[in-house]
Image 1 (cartoon, helix red, strand yellow):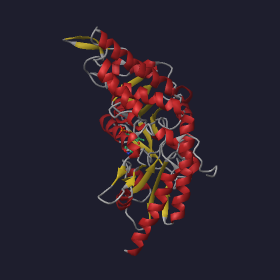
Image 2 (cartoon, helix red, strand yellow):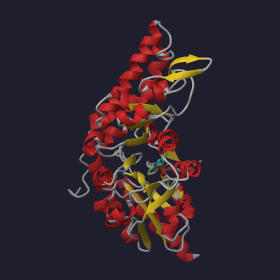
Image 3 (cartoon, helix red, strand yellow):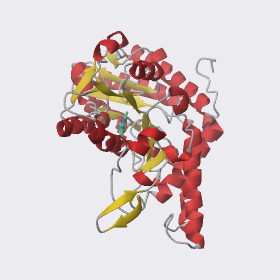
Image 4 (cartoon, protein in one colour):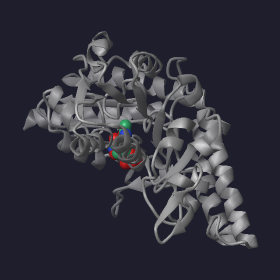
Amino acid sequence: MTTATKDQLDVERIRADFPILATILHAKAGTAGVPLAYLDNAATTQRPRQVVQSMVDVYEKHYANVHRGIHWLSDQSTDLFEEARGKVAAFIGSASTEQVIFTHGATESINLVARSWGDANLKSGDEILLTEMEHHANIVPWQQAAARTGAVVRFLPITDDGRLTLDKFDEYLTPRTKLVAVAAVSNVLGTINPVQEIIARAHAAGALVMVDAAQSVPHTKTDVTALDADFLAFSGHKMLGPTGVGILYGKRELLEAMPPFMGGGSMIRRVTTSGFEPAELPARFEAGTPPIVPAIGLGAAIGYLNTIGIDAIHEHELRLTRVAHEVLTAVGGVRFLGPDPEHKSGIVSFTLEKVHAHDIAQLLDRQGIAVRAGHHCAMPLHKRLGITASSRASFYFYNTTEEVERLGRALEEIKRIFRRK
Ligand code: 7TS
């Protein structure tokens, strides 16, 4: 092995924790089948035994509703649930646990801000500044908020190679801009955006910043305090956790001034027939029974990520991205969406001359390689790039250079098949 392709992480040992990664697909009578190469991690990641076991343990030994019963089991599940909140707070550098709100996913977290903060603070003529590379989850809630309040949604353009045009940022940042909502990492381009600079410049112009960190928190070190982020959202299932749990981080003074998003149990201090008084943070934004077991599973996922080390994870993924660019370039006829590897995370989207993205995904699947094809919930971005669909390989720390090389060989084969047609 050359040093350029050598995996620093002990990926083989790591993979032993993920039984699903040993799957053999398409085995029929007389054929051995093909091993799974799971390269769809931007959609959702797999989870190790430790995370699954943590949730089984809760259901078998500690499960009850939280904050409700004054009984032994309820105390146990409440402790585990709050311990998970503490792990999340530490993982993202939150100054307190009360600023970490459990939601059901990044989508809900962004909707919470758009509804609660948006409806209370936006008025006709105000501007919400997004970018051309946002996921629909960070576009539609703002379009809905704009429709309710009369605010206007604007889009900071990107360059042809998929980076933000920060030289135009000040032009787009006007005295009417109330909020900038930006992905820390694009789910299609893989571009790592300069969030720290965006926040500093937005603040200087009097605007708040909502960071869509769905594709960054699982892969790179995040420190909300150092970033000075106003709001930050992400999902558990993209970082080894289960589906059904996500996080909204917010600055204390902003969250405390916001009206509750949903009404129900837990989010109140007092209810009378004439009204209610909302609870303190974080309960204020956690109406109803929260995702108790998924939240504890997310805590276990963070524990697992910490044993590997987020910096080692990031480095490994950057290496895979470099290898992917090399092998895909060698195929010929591949157009990469997004910038060169040095500006991006472990996401490589591309088109292949004369072959539709869906055909690519289907033919790759026959070889056991799982990628996503389509618009990846980023239709405005695809329109900006002049295409309707792309194929996307996205990596996590359990992927190997061998899997990426298999992707290259499989694409060469697909190219040959289509040349014959
Ligand atoms: N923001 C970004 C940048 C995302 O990539 C996604 C999901 C979301 C928000 C929404 O997260 P959810 O957990 O609430 O659905 N992205 C993708 C994807 O790229 N392929 O499938 C889901």
